[in-house]
Length: 234
View: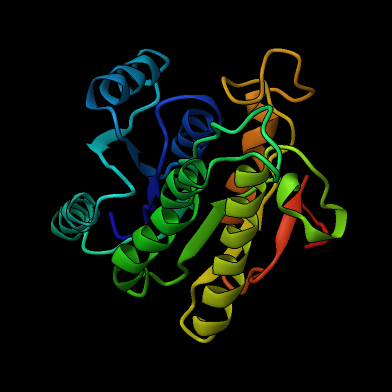
């Protein structure tokens, strides 16, 4: 187990998260798939098992400090360290809304899941990442978060993902010298429940850059925002 990478993937029961779990496990990584819904998470893990891919499921609500502490305790007990954290869990419930009419309660709910949650998960698991020879944090963001190309629509989603990018930059700077890299990724417009059936990319394509960043060798990039394995404007 010393040579086996240990990964936690949030929101791993469907879409891009599930495919990230599949690809990481296929590379020999021991994957802890997490999801808020225990039944759906266990079902997703069982589906992967049928394809020959083995993952461990652990329930996680990224907005709940006790749930995060429980996950950290599990990883500590079972593995003693963590090598990869992919913050993929997110919600988008502001379709069709504008900055003029989005309810602040909607923004608050999405901030809890999309920004505060990933930061809390990082805070809970960074001590275990520091025990890795090359810790990796990948925050799944969105092109809609880019200030360089900011436009209207889905204001809460844009705000929460832009704030997540700020979390990436802050932690990347603060963790310099620790061996932990921190990056954001725009997976593209992907055919998932969130992206819809007309999206341009498959889940396999959407998961590629997060997995690439998560498996970079020692000395890999940090503090960046990536799309299709290339840097993109913040």
